[in-house]
Image (cartoon, rainbow, N blue to C red; front, side):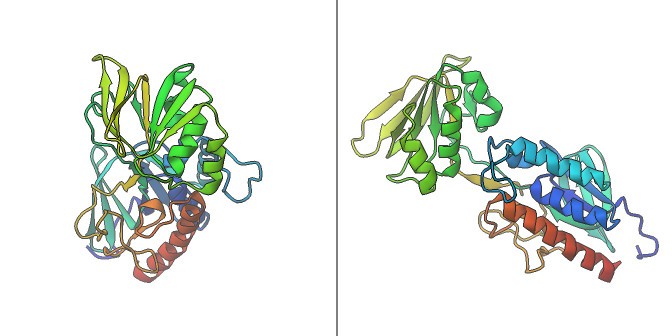
Length: 314
């Protein structure tokens, strides 16, 4: 198929509609590049489920993740971005076009594509975790914390997300048991200091999370092990919130797009992947810093590189 006969659904298609994709769309649409964003879940990605963001420049008092995501969406749509609900299953090249295959909405053709699918929360992989999903087991404190008003809960993890969400959950829960597998936090000193002042949270270092137990309907308790003594510990709670890291949303990608050993997308200095015309930005990219500010910056950079690619190849 030649460049003269190629028919495109858009100049640019982004897979995902988080901060990186929305930032890119603001730039591309302002330059009259028709831009479609395909999102299978929530606009704003994980940023939208973050209770409060204190480190995004320009908001001295902080801003909720939901409000920041909504502001980005409104700004992108003001310039003409088209956000669609769709789940992508494959990406292939056909002549000058990049074809994005979706599960239920057919193929969509573009001059360039941005992969901005971000990450999702890792699972513990223990007994009871899958069985009690959304019946006591959760991965989003902002989404589900209010269900545990006046109750006792467990939070699992020792990084920034775990500490930040444990603090947030004290708005609802009477008490939080924070289970940390290692002997030290991976969270920032600022968060750890704030944690130390909160009397509603009990920290259990060197404690594994072994099993989530319920009555067949709801969670009743969590079993763990004190790694130093070898003794089993029981936590009588009705909710478990898991924050043990992130993994990239890249299982749908073809082998023609190179990923690193963990599954993050590998790019060159122009943010282009191993498949011509396909770019990646934000948390899904290998080497990303996992910060909203840098994801937005990469989205803007990707827009400029995509414009150059279109000018030189179409």
